[in-house]
Length: 154
Image (cartoon, rainbow, N blue to C red; front, side, top):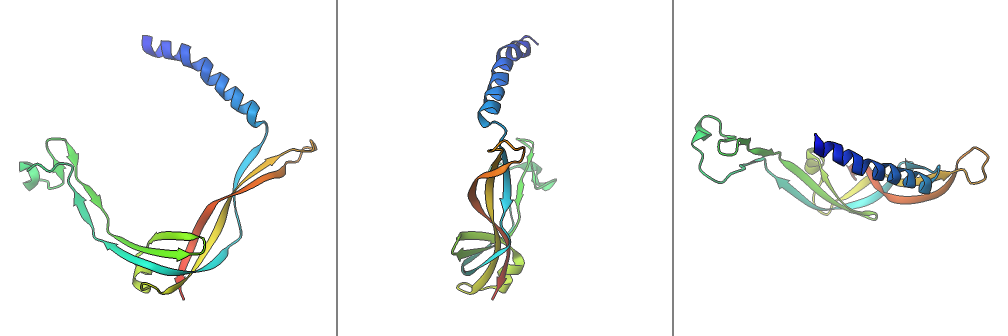
């Protein structure tokens, strides 16, 4: 109990002062994540990689309890982890290279085949009341990346 009381007394003032400083530095700015309207771009399938389902044992030692429950490691008291199968499709576009895990797409496309990629651009927009009229205006808009929506073979 003494340690908790000591930490509360010593760190709480610094946390409050830090929070107040951050509040004063940022002012009343409002930061939002916004997206553009839906856009399309052409792409090409660069590679397809299939990874089969596997179980990763947390211990390499021989475990006599494997006859009872093959996924339980008696020495460490942990279960082995299961890694699901993956159907990865790598696509090159004008906005970057993307990895998509989709069984449907994996079956539909071949390497070097053209695809149509639908996406939205993600922005971090900052709003502030510049002219002090009570309404916040857009001050800054920075592109933060892309959100892929759909990939279709051509």
